[in-house]
Image (tube, rainbow, N blue to C red; front, side, top):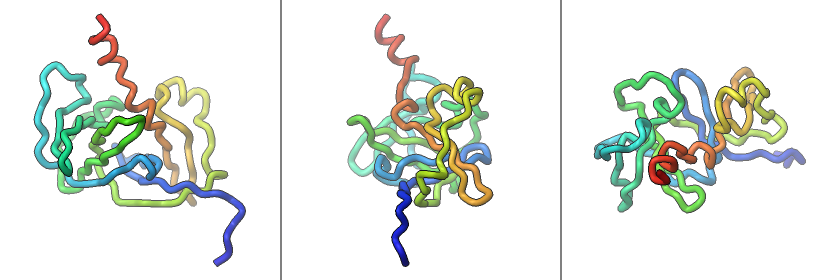
Length: 154
């Protein structure tokens, strides 16, 4: 197998509402089934509570709610993706997550201007793998919680 001059980046792929998203695998600590979630009073609507995972208590964010999709019951396919970025550990609840892929850098394009303004700064780009379109998330922006900052600041 020859090594290509093109660089690839490893991503974990997951689905929300029949759309495939990717996050850099370097920020992912582990993936697991969604088990016991303890609700936390007065939290943002998308922070469904906290979970105990491998000795840590971490906040759990339902990405369906964060992105404005309808909330659905959790199933055996629902996954908690535990990520760590900027010294923060958070669990992301997604419909399903099972793939690890390397995406060639040249297949990742910037988000079109109209899409970027609608989706906030969550999208880092859009990749194509064959016929598949994958929305690449900006994990740092995903964890910016203006609702929490404004509540604590005032």
